[in-house]
Length: 254
Image 1 (cartoon, rainbow, N blue to C red):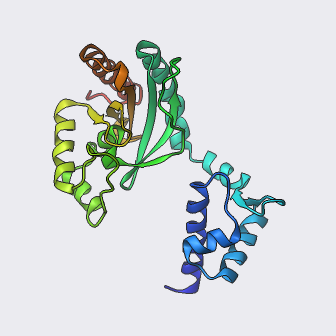
Image 2 (image 1 turned 60 degrees about the horizontal axis):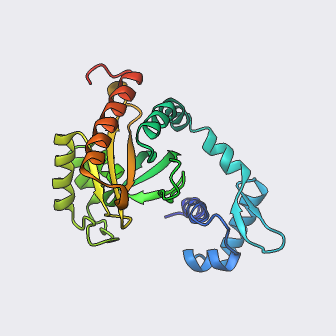
């Protein structure tokens, strides 16, 4: 790896790290977590601050994501348009079920949440837009993976460690492929406390013309409100919503 590529890789590693630490990190914390020489870390941080991609708190000396990175994110028109199109359908789904509704897209082996609408219950799912979670451990992740072929899923997950979050988490590629085949057959995915204990999720995928704008919507139900009637009604509403969204996005084969 030449020095230019190495510098670019380190810059992106810093941005990835600070994206996951909203309160920021000091120079020493960044250097230790990424195991980059301190002099190189300092030079990269100063450059990114100068360009507006990072900012540094004068008192705590912590570095955080800067306004320029936010502006760059806003230029991702595909996601912005997807959220704009999906939001009214998500709100209607929330109003029908009074549960948390989320929208996500797939990035590698993770799902990234890009929109969320909350119910008026005090007991609700604690989550936020921008979070990245492992697709094998979430209903919405399995719904997204169902849009890929088995070969594509195998390619993505070969060599990936399947982290275990609860006793119900899928822990192997064969088990994941079996679950995804069931998602394709049923038209929806479930998450039975596989990432968050006490939370049951139902999710379904949708996409636009020629598979563009692939995404999925999920509804999260606390165990205390989970009944057979609620599950049946949620499945019906989620499948109806993604059907409408697919039509709205130009698909004619749904």
